[in-house]
Image (cartoon, rainbow, N blue to C red; front, side, top):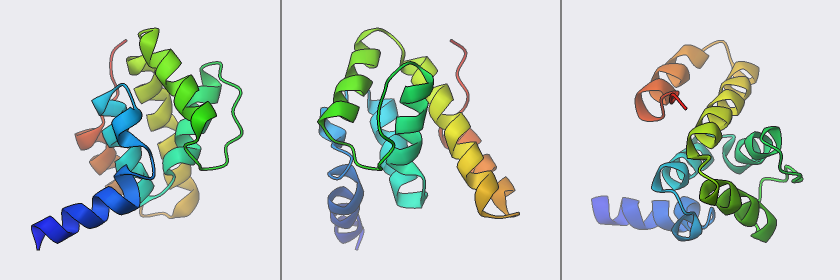
Amino acid sequence: TEAEALAIYKTNYWDKIRGDEIKSQLIANFTADMKSSGGGVWNLQRALNSLGANLVDDGALGNLTLGALNSMLDAGKECQINNAFRTQQILYYQGLSNQHQNWYTSLDADYPQLIC
């Protein structure tokens, strides 16, 4: 059922990326979606590092990653985080398959490049 699917998504993705603790709904949704489709937290960590953080890209959204993310969000960098995260996801998709055009289309529809 839809309720069961939502409960599974919440447990397996939202809770694992600590979605309720991320200070941006956009970035929380983006991170949860990418965790479910691949790349996820690793690419978020790489994006944050490209913006000046110094995180180990271990794929775990722990206290250091959450702190760096929320600090950047507090500094008004949601747009830059979104765009850097997109860039990392695109690089990830390029490394997976020659079928990545479908993933780009989905990424563009759900999490478009923002004008900062």
